[in-house]
Image (cartoon, rainbow, N blue to C red; front, side, top):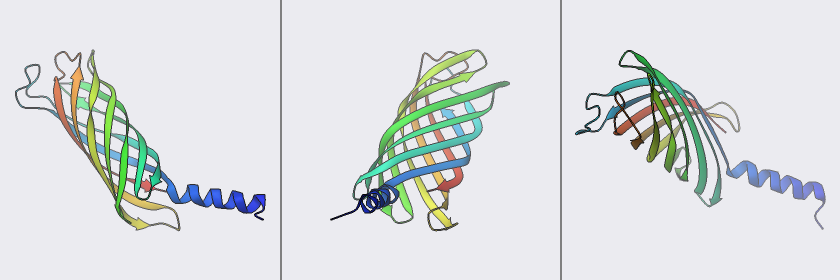
Length: 170
């Protein structure tokens, strides 16, 4: 018969093996208007910030994730802010490579104009080197395709964003 301590140990091991916790301490991104955008065809903003991903592997290498990101930068002589949240799936392609496909929503603001972000992204994170038994450093890359709902000049109506980040994975 299993003791309560053994059952707790198995549950702890199960969670530790399947938990996804990734923090891109430093993330840099670029957002640009898609071609033919009538609101702001020349929009291009560089920003920096952070991103946090939390999830759980559910079946084998397939998991569910939630993600939050904050970036701030400069564009058109004003400060650009972006705060988004996402929900999606992750697959572990290899022991050192994870891919995510997520739906995203949030808010962007530039000068006195703000818009709601609705879209999605494809992201990958790659293990660089291990710092211990459970903690590793990662390189993350992300490509977003979004509509900016309610956007007014100087924000674009549709945009493409790319970001890179360095951080930690547990």
